[in-house]
Amino acid sequence: MNCLRISRRLLLSCRPADAVRALAPVPPQAMRNTRYYSRFPALERLNILGSIRTSLSRHVHRSPLPPLHRRHCTSDCGSFDRWYHKPCKVAAVAALASGAAVAAVCSRYDREIVPYTNHTHLVVMSPQSEIKLWEPHDIKDKKVWASQSLMVDPHHPDSVRVRLIADKVLRATYRTLDVKTRVAQPQTSHLDGLKWEVILIKDDDANIECTPTGKIIVCTGLLDHFKTDAEIAFSIAHEVGHIVARHKADIAYTKWFPKHLRLPCFRKREMEADHIGMLLLGAAGFHPNNALKYLWKQAKIDGPSTVFENFISEYPSYKKRMECLSQPEVMQKAMKLYRESTPDQGTITQAADTRFSFQETLGDICNIISTRLKQALRGRSAN
Image (tube, rainbow, N blue to C red; front, side, top):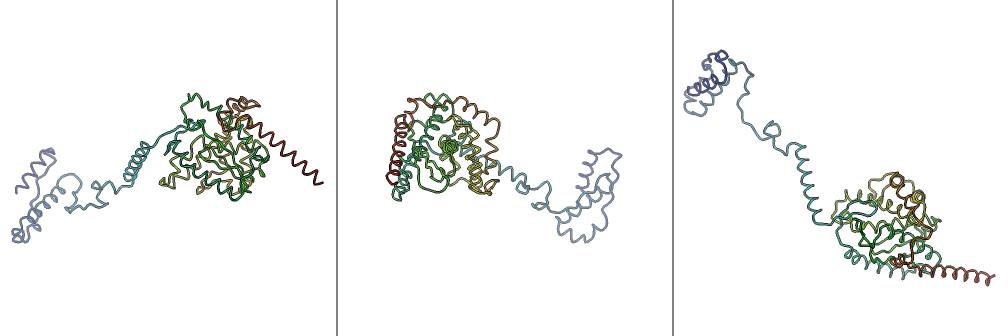
């Protein structure tokens, strides 16, 4: 009875007097087994409560109340759902967690700005540590090449030719970067005092590689497929671009970096090296269109499968690489450097800062003349 009184008071306080009718008495069905309910007071209270709800649903103008039942914490609970039952909330939490992890990693490593492109990337080691790491590999590779007689004689005309082309590219690099003043914000200190060296090895593949220590390894197959100096210059400028941008120290080259993120980073680094290489090509006095010619020939050498995009490859497709180099901004900047270039790139003082001095260049020219004279004399004596 107390429950009925309380419910009636609440109803009168919430509704106008004319909207409430007299409540019907408790139905006889609910009063059955009175002795049974008197023995269990809790069940009796539950029965009375159910009768009150039924009466209210009959006489009050509102939607029927749902029957009493126990709510369980499942996915069908409506407003009682947990956050992990909704995919959007799970995705939001995962994004926040990954963002926090990336922020923690970024705070641990250094950020550097790449010259020419002004892109920002994370590096995992200093220039000094990088050189110390790669110097033993260079010494080991030289011993292997020397034991297998793969290194071409430095006085050979092909070796001299490759070094002369590299000399032009390196002079253009140091001139356009203005390493001595270092007023610009991008990272260029790792190029100070770097010992550049070009090594020609006997290999039929049209390949070229570089190391952070300044070593550029050129295969003889590259000279067989690319006849012009401009095409060889772009291949060297591309490798110089990797060294200038410090791609080997990038965070993507670490073993713990996720593989599904590593491949896009590798493709991005290759296109960035193309960008820098094209600018250096124009600054060295070669027309920038030779970069597109080189990529077109290289696509023919590697086969049609490399022309279009392959998402499981470390290298971007040649089509995409040529499209990036054909952008107006990149081409205009390269043409500007090409117009500003002079036939004799660099002076004697600028050449002394690099690995190749002006005296070495004259010595290489003399070696070419002497080698060709010796070959001519041997041919005449044989006849």
